[in-house]
Length: 86
Image (tube, rainbow, N blue to C red; front, top):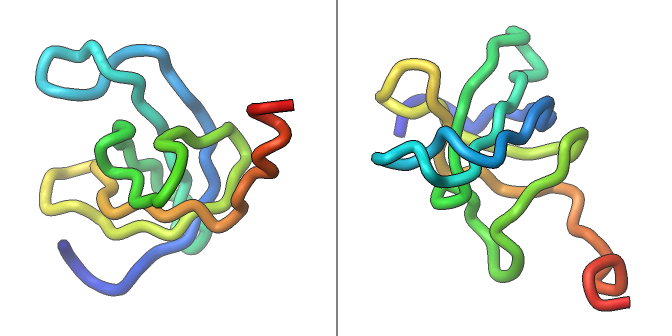
């Protein structure tokens, strides 16, 4: 993990492209401060609930030692469970 936590918004979700074999869903976050883009998959989402994120949600994350990758992604906008179980 490198540096201080960053803040950003999810700008894209792809149904595949993450993980070793490219079979996991992947996400793109744009850093609020420097406008750079970082990719990650659901394994990097730190949560007690859903391991999914919607486009437009705000997150806090760390920049990975791997170029262009985010890790330890935390959702800042928790969804209403009724949106999933209504």
